[in-house]
Image (tube, rainbow, N blue to C red; front, side, top):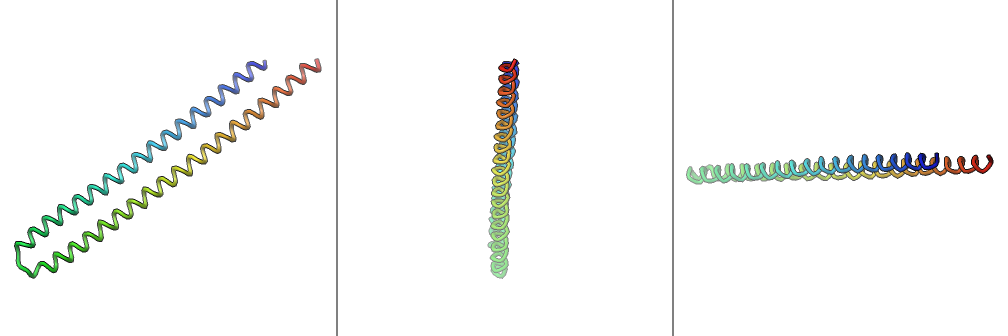
Length: 136
């Protein structure tokens, strides 16, 4: 009886720990994918903006000098847009990482609580079984 109880407890603890490990790994993979996608989007946006700027400046430099002031305005606007996009993407990545840390901490605390409860229940059951065997 006691051996079966211990075996059940060990199996339950192992299953809970493995399930938590799988959940944590899946969360980490999701966060890594999100971060990689955000970084790729930022890089693509910056490259496209730089290419468009180079093409625009080259085409405007061959035209009249009156368009040089408008090309400066366009350059400033595009640079501001790129900076804002990069800043927003960085904030998104930071928020995702913070959420991941909170979720992992909650999961770890939950696992610790479950393991402690299971161990306490097993110890209490063991003490009760021993006391019953001693009284009989």
